[in-house]
View 1 (cartoon, one colour):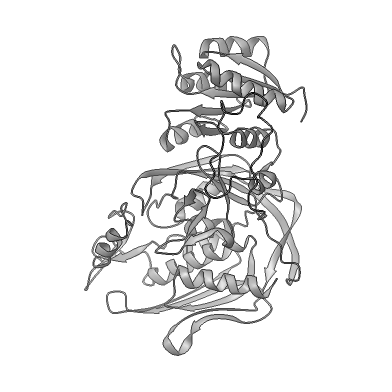
View 2 (view 1 turned 90 degrees about the vertical axis):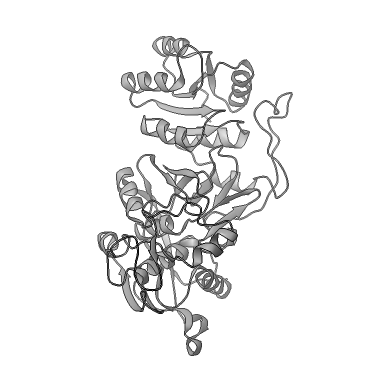
Amino acid sequence: MQTEKKILIVDDEDSIRQSLSDVLKDEGFEVLLASNGQEALKALDAKLPDLIILDIWMPIMDGTEVLKEIKAKYPELKVIMISGHGNIEAAVKAIKLGAYDYIEKPLSLEGVLLTVKRAFGESGIRSLTQNAPIEGQESETIGQQRNGETEKRRNGDSHSPIPRFPDSPIRMHSRQRTIKRSVVLGGQGLHSGGKTGVILSPLPPNSGIIFTGLSSEEMIPAHLDYVSSTDYATTLKRGHASIMTIEHLMAVLHVYRITNLLIKIDREVPIMDGSATYFCQMLEDGGIAEQNEPLDEIVIKELYIIGNAANGRYISIEPSPNLTVEYSMEYPQPIGRQMASFTLNDPEVFKKEIAPARTYGSIKDYGKLEEMGLAKGGRLSNVVLVDEEKVINTSLRFTNEFARHKILDITGDLYLLGRPIKGKVVARMTGHTENILLLRKIAEFQK
């Protein structure tokens, strides 16, 4: 860490300022302090810092107003917003106004240092994910880490964000990718029913795709090892933290070959209109950045299969020069018999042919989902609903929209091995559970 890096801390609470100051000084930073927005703006004119940590809720002049003035005068200066009374809506607003990131109080040592290191172009991800609190343990927060305790670290699991199969048939195909700048999207959770949102931020090479909450405390690698549920959506869990409904976003990351990304989220990826279209646009708004590290792909060399073709429910993958997914389904009307096929060789084709396909469900299933505590956010605008005769709330975007949506889900789940896959997938009447079982078989036989 370079000692000449200057960080301005702006917070009206003495304890927060002092605790943050102690932690950052221990890491070799020069620290400047301000107790309100006006002091902060004067301090900027006297000595421009390299980074600002800015509280939102302050008297005289709140952090949002201060942020606007900072970005108007110093547009390239990175600002990390913090708040003890915030939520995902506050995070979305802050990022849209130009903040580099948002952290929710109580602040954790790991979360603050991770965000600061990212702001200065360092990852910190690998060491932090390897030393995260283990199940049943609570992280210490800023203010509890005083009196010589700032160097304590929890010992956790040793999963690497990008697991490598030592004997797997891989080849160097392209470069790793991230995005050029942070982007944000607000919405509603399909199953939690609450307001939610997602913030995407760039990460250095070899960091992997990492999910985290607003406090940046518990980080969950987007990997098969952390899948905890496949009931109507794919859910990741680590320690006390879990992230629901990741498959649509993961499909877009797979197609655009994004390998290093921090995804900050509040419990559940927003459902938007039930498709992946918004995530395609979000990623393009962030800009794709090629990185100077090679990308290892998983190249399937033999047939793997889950289920049995004889009973009509199966999913398989076999060698192919590209990722191809074929899906078929057969239900009573109004769904009927549907088939779809997609070869992943052009994100633009995916954006037009697969991404718009929406989540669907039947009216009779909603009672069951409510009993399970799911689909609380289901609305006429984000789910294609069918009864025993017809689609009741919208017009289909494709005659085989439901089969196309299954391809979307498969493409997302397949990315939970941490690298793009080359192989042909053939599936019939399957869902997330079978997708994950197939991944486990691939991982098992490639170790």
